[in-house]
Image 1 (cartoon, protein in one colour):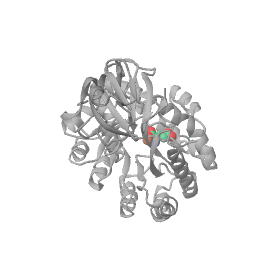
Image 2: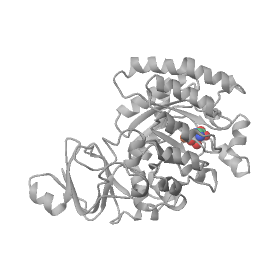
Image 3: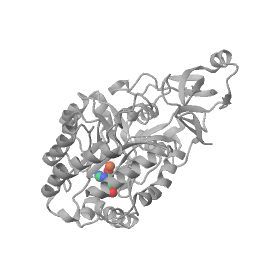
Image 4: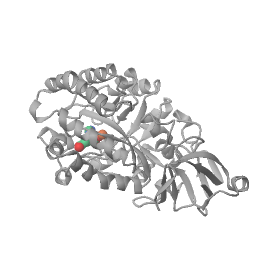
Length: 416
Ligand code: NIG
Ligand code: FE
């Protein structure tokens, strides 16, 4: 198929973009893209491709923008229930951490999620996956983390693998057994850390061998934060995961600067995420590594906070920046990467072009898939969006709605 007459075809060609190089969209005016067998074969000016492939089935997008599907590199997709009652408590003045210390927060969702079957987990997540797709997300990372015990965490992992195989949104799994201290270990973070290191991670490894052998291993993530896991506990968990050959991620500096970002850089993690309270030292450690800094602007927005990731400082230090939704029931129930772009422009103070790179090729790098998705280049998956506008700068400028008119996944129109 030949998709042609795009006012702007954004190819995002050339790989992930660091530091001040961020923002190259690779625009082809009046552009076209040739797709065969679910892959991009060629991009170029419409006149050129139409002349060279006269027999090809055509799709005239009549002056609309075409770009790669969004890659959302941080979601807590799998959970039961919701916590709108906590939102109300926060509006009345309680902080997220106060609610967590009082036995609410993540463990409230754990209570609702633990007993769910794999089928129930999938059924609860499905409308969210469909919401993501409709808003242009064609690949996403998805975390476990609402079980905090081996059986339930593995059920969540199974739900992610099964949803992935349904092929709606392609999912990169992450095991987040170290998301919070479960009620059984209340005031004993040390005890639960030992449980994660000595029991849960080896069980994960054996489970993966049995259920997903040959597939790329899931990321292992940890919530490195006051009230969750200390820097030292996070290190033990990630080092154990690394010794079992799991790729790594970390939740760092959402509320306090504990040094998690530098730890991620040191251990060669794929990404360090949140990074609101990140120190200059941690920024420089990150920027000297290939660990992607993932900003999650829906989280401070969802919490009504005014402090966001110091994206400009990360770019000035030559860091690799990506953006994500953090879709979760506590702080940020957001299925829409267009809204993430709108927030990023305003609060991370980056341009629309930079935000688009952060939501495509750079976010693909944050989940280790920049070789397959995140740009429209020969050999890459034909995952693309047709917007209802003729200029990409309308992304972020117009917000709260949906500019995505059509979505193609692996060469097939999945939203029309
Ligand atoms: O990324 N910080 C830890 N995890 C989530 C919140 C999860 C929840 O509250 O359920 C986050 O913000
Ligand atoms: Fe998160």
